[in-house]
Length: 255
Image (cartoon, rainbow, N blue to C red):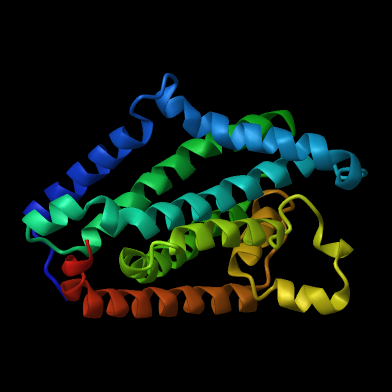
């Protein structure tokens, strides 16, 4: 395990600032897109699917926006994590520091976007409030699980992407499949029983569904499933980190 010094912390902060500026450089609206992107995505899905799936469902808009915000965090975090090493190749080749800082910095920026995006959720919540209960205290656990999944996955893909540039296109297509397989805009109840078991193998879908249970419907989630996805995320994180550490030193020749 590498000791993180104050210099490393300063570098992490600078990488976060630089990545943040680069994402919105040349944009007229800049950081406002953090709010506009999930809102317009919500608007499109709501217009297309609300007539079909919102009948008799008073909190459909809250369900939809919460699902899109969490999925967007996963999508953006894994996408930026995947390209993080290659995009910072000039720094990696010149400066000696723990390379995992580059991956973590890109995902912290995505986490900042997630936090700001919740402004939209709370705006919708104000107009269609649900009870605030002790179950809301469980929600940070789901954010930790989701973040561990993103970081662990990015440790794998950031290494592989340096050698396999097609991986970005493959992952973009995979994200579309995950989006439609996560029951973001439709209820699980419409799925045949045999597909529901497969559905719960998707950790993103489980995180979204159980987050809805605690934030919108005041229902205690299935704690067994919560423990399973927690330990799965920890395992992915550990193996991703070990894979990263094993391969990072031999990667410079591929930049």
